[in-house]
Image 1 (cartoon, rainbow, N blue to C red):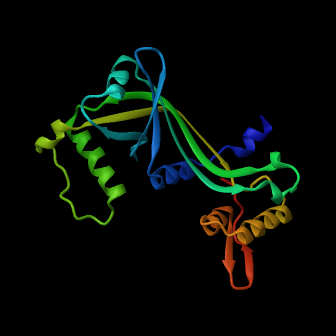
Image 2: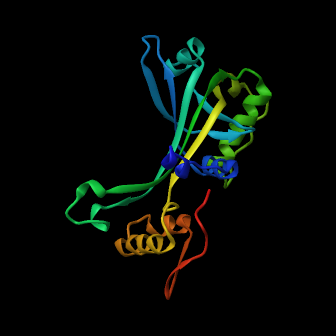
Length: 210
């Protein structure tokens, strides 16, 4: 329980920012045989709810109508930490830095046209911020050709592992190893961990407490 407490994201703002940044979430519903179905989806987080667009027919639509209890999950792998960071002889010490948010809630098919417009325009603003499209309005026939699924959260839990449990010296040591390994995500990971890469080396600019 102590470890889970250290890993839990306490800041609702941090959770909101993470959901706004990520492009793929996974919705889990229960099919008519009682098995979970998990599907990756584009989504937008608006007014404390998750919105997704869908075909008007399909298994997930049927699932939601039969059982509106769903799960929704978003995660980002920040950095794989190879075992040799700790001990070249012990492969079990490999680890991963990550951020994740898990939602439990109830799903509804949105019928109100104004709410559908809000959700669909919100999706466009998120995924096509450069514009070059005509915003939807409630009089457009296209609204009848697409379904919008809304997940109303009953619980939202966030977890993160970015070195926040380490003492300052150990965190600097880990950051230096990540920089030296120079993976494609290293610099972004270090920024999230609270470091800045300068010409003279690493500088710790922030405490990674969320």
